[in-house]
Image (cartoon, rainbow, N blue to C red):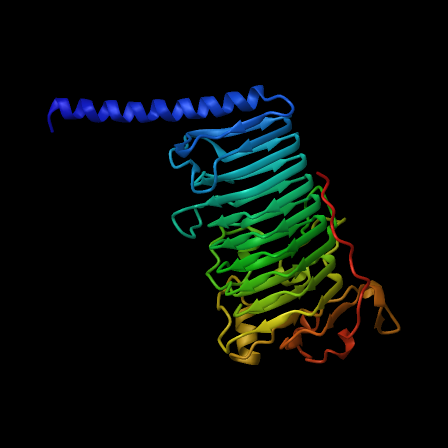
Length: 401
């Protein structure tokens, strides 16, 4: 190749780098100088961003593009930072009308913020499901008044849409696919998850309470009017993550959470467990957090529609529940699986206090099994009579404007 051609290539490469730096500098400068009431407009087209964008102590600020197909922030050339966008210690923030893709770590992380809206966003890794993808697509944590509407999350190695250690949460009208967890609510209180489409993940919708986190004991979570379908892709979470224990073929999973209401969902063809209600003990992990409560309590599962083709569950030595289910049920796995592990402190004269029962009613085609996991799976039962009960319905969540 001639010297002239080499110089031309170098000039083009330098121009691209300079352009990247200018776009980054322009957006970052606006985040630093933003005043209350400002709207930061992101450029049209695909912008290649080489460093994390960070806003701290913002108040009443909107970050807005021109639509998910018209404004794309791409982090393929990222050389500094992990997140795509990070917002901290802020209030009343709106992120709207753009696509963000391929950051090294989380695509959008919002922490310690009161009032955060994600509206009409696409958060994605474009190379397909891979362990090397970042953990979270949309990631509000330790926040209040979280509103997620009409968003799409693709390719996260943990959760596409994740809300953790937060309160007053709405996740609606959104789609999640090719993630390990499509939508996850973790250690959070007062959450409504509805009108979403969670499909082709490892697990569709997860409601978790986990140990060793600053915020304990989530609850008062409603999951309704969702389509949770074909969540059967192999688990690609990095080893050591708790979601790495979620078996492929999980529809809705309640793990050690309390005061959860699941109703009016279509839950279909999740080959291992359309719905599972389990304690933390099922993970096989030790519990060192003395303040952690590992049992699911006060669960109300009703008026859902189930469908499942006869098929084997997922088999994996890291998620061995599939072997147990196949051994006992072959290809006809019950739709609703309860591990049956109960807090003995809530039992009096052999009867569990009504307030804490797992209640299951009026589910169309919803076969059930209690695995009796606390008794080495010795007395599995399909008897739903002991779960034919109800709990007072939770109130709708109100997110402040």
